[in-house]
Length: 464
Image (cartoon, rainbow, N blue to C red; front, side, top):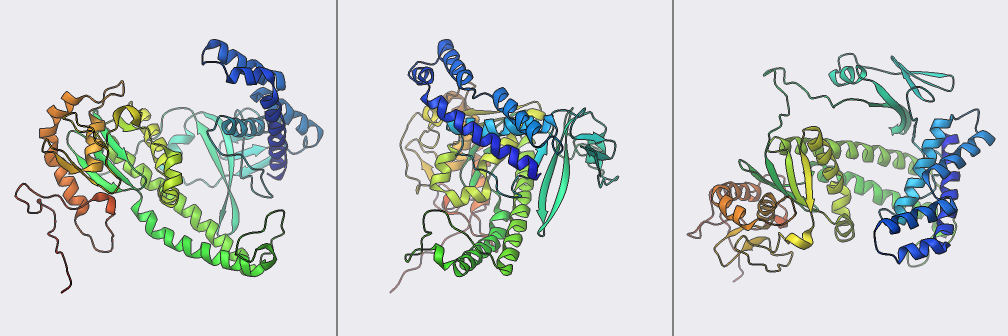
């Protein structure tokens, strides 16, 4: 793993050098001023080949490093994948699809993988073979998922290092050929998570999700259980910051900010133990969040396999709601939902917010901007509904071309309105030990002005 880290850093450094040559290339500068088209694509491709900023060129550089230094530790397939990994990281940065990649410090590279199961890292029945090593795997014979996977052809193997309670443990991830396993309910004999053909509309925010289909609707907070557990992580982070400042007062300015330039950081034994505990809690939080994402995706696929939602501006979410997005990870949830929908024979259809403007639009055709603090959609045509639920309803009525079908929305409204009001009432009713997000809005009210069924009356307190 240490040899792989050094190869990756060397490839990343070489990719940065060639990226700078690419920016200075006249052919590349001319291509940036061209209009998109066939000539535009050819110009970019030729400029990349001219300076050697291609996947194949970085792979070749990785193999040269391996043959010169690490021939006894690493095989060709592993270093080629490391070269590809470095190239793709820098390429995403150039295309403004990610941040600037960082070099890996000691013991910070935790994954290596091969290209096939015939050479390099190989899986053989119950163990992994790599460069003369035979690493036996701990397999639970009662695990149906593992038994199902081992019955399929292994395409390639990935070794993953994770730190559990401060100790390094290794997993072998087998990339298999075939379709994922579907669990069977032993009581009914049918699938535990059934799929239903149909369409679903989703409105996904930084902390809430509204879902609407023909037979069901709900409004919930995303990964609510993780938010409660994250308070422990926040306390440890503040504790670590106090320890870091106490151990390294020379690295901070008088106003409390970190001094610029290179520095040496001292860590006490207690600080190392706190870091190990923080890493373990973060690992468990990530696994719990992924479980909750999968559970919600299975519930939505039981409502319909064709899912429509607005294309979410993840970067804008991160800038405006950084902490909420880092805890709930709505972007990762959409990727899980897309993968599961494709496995079910459906798809996730994303349409731009610029053309639909679901949070500003009514089915009567009225378009009116609303501040974020206004959580109830209220129109002169008489429609009053919680903002996220109504946006999910309109997403359900969007065509395949990404345009809102107003006639379809008016036809479906009479049958879906009771479902939306019930979902609104259920989301806003008080629950012990749980704070209701302010983005849900107030409880729905009936035509007479009294709270709708399932809602709770509110008292207004004043001072005399």
